[in-house]
Length: 452
Image (tube, rainbow, N blue to C red):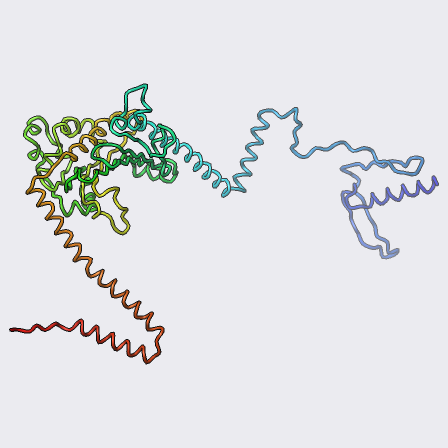
């Protein structure tokens, strides 16, 4: 048995020595010898590594020596991982991430920026709305501990009638549009206040805003009650936007004209004490008397006097627009107006939320002019003239739509005839067609009158 074990060990040693991965560094095959036909093999003498052979034990088994534990290349034990190690590891990770996942990384950055901008932009818009509400919009029952707001003093109800709390006065239409409805006042059916803010929650809109700056707007629309507003059209707009305003308002084009010298149209007392900002504002009125009656001394003193307007309100005021012909402005692609008897005011909001109180005089102007329009009465001649203009316009509109109505009626008759014709035999259909053509020819024939 011992002899057999030794023999096996020698065979194993010879097999290991003969493998190509063994310690031989070079093998030279010189070919066969011509005499004995045997190959000659030469082994290099200088070996890079040594092969350890382990003798078999008493049972004939060969036990190899235990190999030392090898670590992966670049492996650093936990105890040796300092701050510099983690910095290098992060650098390697970043290089791999940027090299292999460029598109995915870009998408993640864009989505993260959109999400962060949406949250921050929405909160900014909400803070603007809350500041406006605390300054002007809170109802009377919500300001018991402090002075009432302008809306609280003027309206019995601020907010919707089904609100659950007194402070629930504003409803959100979108992330940048907020509305407040108020009612319960003399001369007024209701008043809708809209805060049209910049789309701060939209990252793309913010980028566009860097090139084309936009501003937050306050739009107030007053629905006057029936009988409290005589027929009239009046507009006061910024000079730079007057052309676009006239183009977009059909009633202004039909009824109003530019007041060339508003200073002369003011009342005598107003002319003596105040100056109209002619270079900044354009007046479009149905008559000069209408402008004289509605733009009072109070309005001139508080807002429209040239010195006051240029110093305080030029950066906020956009337009005010009164009309009883708002239905003319509706049409295809144009939303219907809030009311037929409409008073509309448009202002810019301050860029600094803390300066919201600077709009107080403009908001007070709204209620002053509501009372002026509600108390305004046209004289007999002016009322007759205004009604005549509207009657002529109605006739023009009737003639303009007459052809359209006739074409619509002809299409309906044609459709009805085609349905009846589908249920007829060919002979009946030909007879009905002949009868219809004769009827059309008879209608188109000129009528003859008998002369006496």
